[in-house]
Amino acid sequence: MQENNSEDIESDDLHEHYRFTASEGQEPLRVDKFLMNFIENATRNKVQQAAKAGNIFVNDIAIKSNHKVKPNDVVRVVLTYPPAEKLLVAEEIPLDIVYEDDAVIVVNKPAGMVVHPGHGNYSGTLVNGLIHHIENLPTNSNERPGLVHRIDKDTSGLLVVAKTEFAMANLSRQFFDRTTERLYYALVWGNVEEDEGRIEGHIGRSLKNRLQMPTSIITTEDLREFKEELLEDIKAMINHQSGFAPKKWLKSPEVRDLLSISPGTLQNLRINGTLPYSKVGGVIYYDYEEIVKVLEENRIHNKF
Image (tube, rainbow, N blue to C red; front, side, top):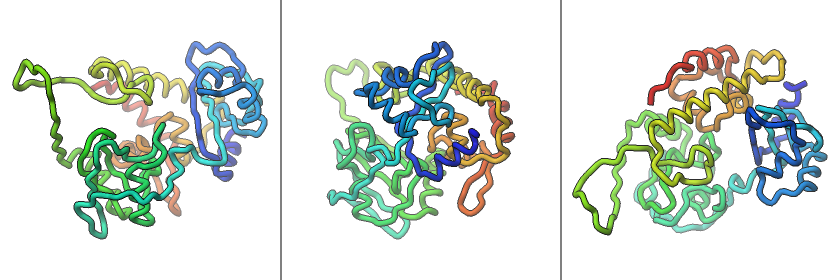
């Protein structure tokens, strides 16, 4: 039954808007109350209507609003239309193009412009301008046309955009392997005590809330703890597969659900050869046993 429901989700072309995984200590709680704790401006009536329409899934099974969420349950809200950040609209935005040929285009992004639509920024982005300038750009694993890398909103600089599938595959591999070179300039002011120095740490989004930047530099110990927690979560999710025998071959959405990873992470696992796959008729399939094998091989890998 669970496998059939998964196939129905794909065929109906539903789009995931929210995904939450209940913690180990989650007490049994009605799914409408559970979602109200996580979704801003959600009301009990709205959640109940979504459940009635078959838009709320727990472990890939459509449930009613009185369903009790338990530890490690994966709760998803899916709708027939994509999230706002995926509704790409071509906009006539002036682009500072410094180079263009049949395979790539290099754009000088001004400071203040967001590269692609996302939370709180649904228009006026570089991608909105690119799809107006060029038709049929290839999309990456996150369904973002042409992008193989990005820079922050308040950073100005050059972005390489792929115009063909071949260019996207090769450029993505180069950025993943870090064979490309990047040069950044920063303007500083104030009383700088040292003429030179080195800051060791990782700058990125909060490990707990991906919509926020951390208030301090992420240390190696932070990353180690986060990775250990992630590995434990993945193991728990695999052990919680509701007692049904897994299919031999899984599609990409099923693998992402199984491992709770993003499309970009799954693409990287394919590109760097970590996760073997087969491709038939344009559809990518993964061997379930190979996935388990990869997890076992990486269980003790704690290097950073």
